[in-house]
Picture: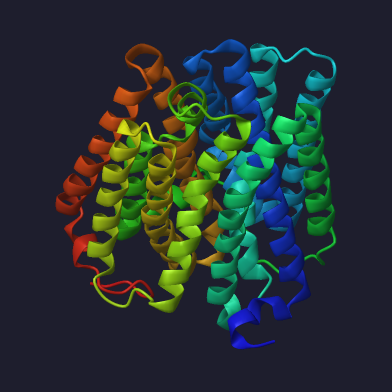
Length: 406
């Protein structure tokens, strides 16, 4: 197999790739279907906020053990068990749909358990790829690993919207089956070698991920920039409101809105691959985050479907730059024996920016309305980019991504 697909020479990575894609695909179908049904049946924006909050809190509360579990128990095992729990949660939602007991309290309780599974899944999944391919193929593997999520984020919401429009039970059943297949793929991978610390677990061991991130100021600045920009500017949670009440679209239209950022991210991956970031990496990062905020504000003001979709494509493209830079910094600069804990810390930042951002958007929209919430959040993200460029000037001066710079 050519160098462009070097990672796929390894059978274990092929199974891992398939499992990650199916897991992300299933999660997107589940997410779109639950959000639409919740808002369609209740009309309450605050419940969209609760959907994000109950999925974020487990990652925050379990951060001290999720990464440690990946480092100590084995990333393949933890990842596979987490997927099985996600499958059970999807099955629980399916049961509610079949028995017409889709009550917000029960749905949120199941999503809380789903959040626990995701809390363990994130660091184990992010850290496993490096154990499945030799070092010379890791960059290739990392690129394709990112591609799985972005591809799933494009077709998953569209499929979820179409399946839900056909029949909600079919959407939830499809998600459950996909989780099961993903778990089978992970457990079919031979147990990989993994560097482990042999000393007794202490507070220092548990806090290793935080200590590393705090020491590496460029890493800290990059992931905190993404945290606050998306926390303030994220609009995904309010898409059911925009689809039904502002743009007057159906469930399929919501799927298109949810898939649009993934299209932009996929385009950006292609551009970055064709034209790698070789200079001015830090400056590119800040400009991209600023444009993320600006396009979010334009989306918030739009009442035209095609313009809204185009803005969401741009939002995904600019956000992908931050994701790409952060992933390289974390995976290539982090020692293997603490990689799980560092990725657990990163999952907290990601969860805060995504799920907690969804909660902020939902609760804020309940009081101030969706348009003000999205526009104000987008402009706040622009301000974050400007402030961080001053606070973390070393990032602004960073030229290259593949090595630390003094």
